[in-house]
Amino acid sequence: MLTPTEKIWHNGHFIRWEDAKVHVLSHVVSYGSSVFEGIRCYSTALGPAIFRLSEHIRRLQDSAKVYRMEFAYSAGQLSEAILELIRVNKMGACYVKPVALRGYGDVGVNGIKNPIEIYIACWEWGKYLGEEALAEGVDVCVSSWNRMAPNTLPAMAKAGANYMNSQLIKMEAVANGYVEGIALDTAGYVSEGSGENIFVVRDGKIHTPPLGASVLPGITRDAIVTLARDNGIPVVETIVPREMLYIADEVFFSGTAAEITPIRSIDRITIGKGRRGPVTERLQTEFFGVINGTKPDRHGWLSPVYATAAVK
Ligand code: PPE
Image 1 (cartoon, rainbow, N blue to C red):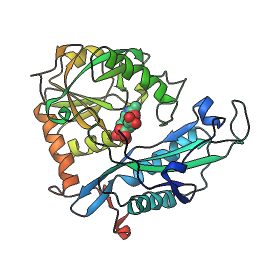
Image 2: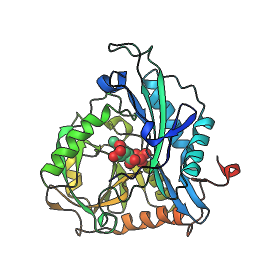
Image 3: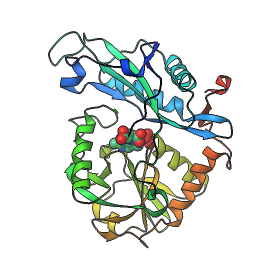
Image 4: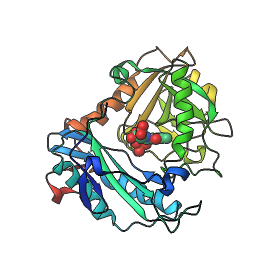
């Protein structure tokens, strides 16, 4: 269960956790008009440090732009608010969620006149797909639900409403005894999990669906592509047919919450040897190496919470 922290940031002020409430007639409640981020702060050799802060803030701004939401705060102000929130709450490793929503005011679908409320909360969040998942892999299915069609809800925006689709995928998967579901896009090609991007390895080459396959432009996805290239592992963004999942040597999920999670079976078909494969393991080693300081932070991905001068 969620353990409250002391403070939540709201429109430039720190308020008590208990006071971070919205009115039931806020636009977001009926119409799903929110955009948000999920960010991890890791406990590192430099103290708590946020992974890819500027990229997450940029995506939040991008999501808002698609939905014509205007922020009263700059990227710099939002970054500083996140760092300060972690300091105020005296947190180490934690998960940070900034959310911007259309609030209380006008009624009706067009929420353009409603105030934009920005909240940032943080809490401790462990392993997303279970404790064993990172080493053992997870059992998943292909969902009967498609990811949103490109001309319905824009997948590049991380909007609250997209997660109604995610909920259908996730609830169906769990009800049927799987940990997660993989959605296809409306053309029938592999898209992503309910809260993760997906990677398929065959003959030493990594494939991941392109942005046109209704996927979120994952920041972990980008980190994996970068780390793979750094390490001479071929990686391509390309359309992935469903059957390629079943005949892959390795398949894994990526996400802020899921990090790099191997998949050991899909629709009860064993993937590769049925456990974490060598490419997945190598990428985990590179990824966690940057975080725990055994590998250099070559791309400047970490923003230390207590050394603001180092924030990008
Ligand atoms: N696709 C979806 C649909 C998604 O929600 C996420 C993140 C990703 C891909 C991976 O993106 P990134 O985190 O930038 O690498 N899902 C977030 C929310 C999870 C939740 O349950 O809430 C996350 O991983 O934080």
